Length: 310
Image 1: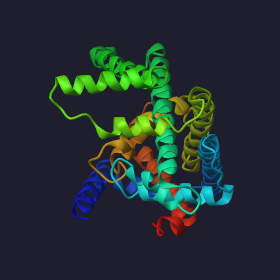
Image 2 (image 1 turned 135 degrees about the vertical axis):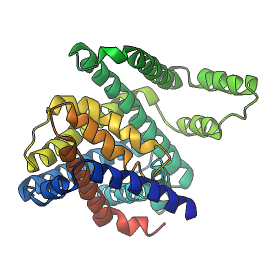
Image 3 (image 1 turned 90 degrees about the vertical axis):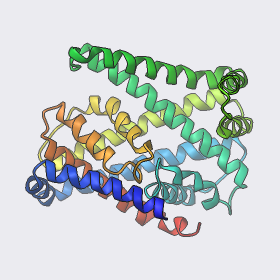
């Protein structure tokens, strides 16, 4: 509890610093003058995003021979993400198997969540890579810092091909990583074994991965639409196509285990991203705060029943 409060304090401190650094009155004024119609539309779009993600999870479970009715699955997913809103690195989502224990056994549920998160991370890497290429060829990257982007590209490619290797040659890749840890005299991460065991429960994983990847890309399109609507609510119009490719980068900031659910880091990332399209930083912070408020309210409304059942 103490660690959680400290991390919440760090995130809140970063957020308050951002608010007071970028014209506090302008942020409050922008939020207070939002168009409620666009806010309601963004909430409706987010509910559709959740439907896509719920369908994806049910497809994974169906692959394992498990069926959960759509409505409970929808609320269980919201409950898991609500818990992730309150934990560092969004680890609360791994409580989802316990929230669904009346429908599935814990081991199968955990395997489905591991696969689910693997698809999420792979999609973030894929879309972020495309977004980076798009930025580069549109000369939106300051070439004075080209060496930074070269290293970023190398890291992105390493993670992406490492992720793909875990499908094409899963056992060989895991054994290779274990040998590296042994050579460095470091105990191998238990998550490698857990990942291997979880993937062993999946039938025809490559076909399932492609299907889930397609659904995840569609979900990112709806999330880009949500941000576009929230921006429109305060009078701005960021390019929709760019947001699909670049929002996943800001989502990765929520995985930083310094604050609760990336509080402060995500808002700074969204503001910096939107500033590339001529949106003032104070407006970007306003959009990020409205987005967090809308999504958190949705998670509480739909998922609190299951989250409290943990």
